[in-house]
Length: 618
Image (cartoon, rainbow, N blue to C red; front, side, top):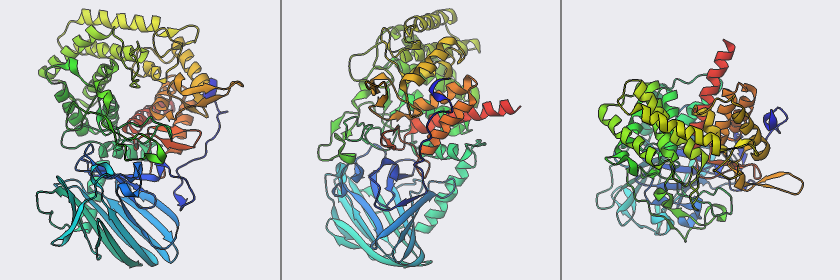
């Protein structure tokens, strides 16, 4: 049974609900998410907003201290007395964040949220006294253009405004505000049962500030809106709470006007702390979004799945062969990449990158991910494929027929020379297989020709993608390197999980890529010392671990599936969020945060496992 047996080490949980203030290093999981379905902000455990891009996910930031320092913009809100400990949680099944700060002299609760967008992006911060008497200090230090430009700060009517170029912020509060150029400060005292509120709104600088809003009305409305949405989730079972939290993350990362979904709301949170594998994830990846669509469909959210499907069809346009691997949330194709040299990076992990040059890569696999998602939505949620959409998808399949023999950059977007990646050809097979299935269900198309190409791909992957010497499907043709992306082979139905080659592959990956119970992404991220011990050079990619959960489930290894998924639940942070990777050396999350790919694949794995458990119970 390999390394996944009960002898696996038990990892300490990092999702403790209480953290002693000031004695832990700076960690990615110390942040929580708030958002308004157009953009999102990250709030630290200490109550500081350290990241916010407005008016949408891929706009310039106004707070960027998470990848720099306080001089690059942040909004501090904390007691002036020494804080002894903090606790935080989301209010039920919502994205309303509550942070309790215990300090010398008393305790307060800070409530942070972004109301659903009507016109102006808005952050509301409410301080509630719990016991004692606590002096609080708020410092809004806005820095536009990714932390590089201080604003022109002045009083305009009942608001203090901060602006430069096209962007402006308006700050109002129930407490006295003081301009300390270029920042805005407030000091106030709250006793038990008292409340104070601060409201920050973005607006175009050529327009007057937006009218004042009632923060407590917005609080009630925001809570109601999230409760109304999560009430429709069809998930139940032992992972119900984790699934619903993941669904909320996926919803929060969708750009409501278009249906596009960002991979994460951040840029350049490092895959290896202190390293340079730092990328901008504030864009809509076809692959990541496809997994999100499947997750939404599994849990009954048809409207969101339909919105994403329509977004995707618009991206295909009249020339499906020019499908990119990613777009802006609005659908823009050009995402130039540059380095923000003035930002020191999270824990000095440079460079901080804006934009993503990988948008020009050729990745063969995205066609399969796209077709898999569309047909999952069609077959499981009844989202129809009309004549015009099928005509466009048929052209896309014809394109796959003409390019599947070409090398590509692969699922991990390697920037060196293209290779013949096994998982890329696997997903090309998926594109043809789903198209064949559609014809067999009544759609028009060249059935025999597409069947022939599909079978050619299948035969080639089995012949050139499998290494008898390694006893595994390998990363690329002719190599002996391992890659956890081949775990998708049984998940997409290419071969059953009980096929001897699949079983051997899983055993080999467990033996050579599994470290402390987590599967690493591929061989290039694992080193073996002279004693034969494995050492990772980056974090464990969480989506790969979720694919392994699905493989275990499909193979009937439910105990192993439960052990692995519960290991991932244990390393989620105290409010249930997951980053891209988990570093077993640091016992900490790494990569952009929170990550849609991690949450979507978690949902898909958990739903599959719960259904298998239900069948086992009879």
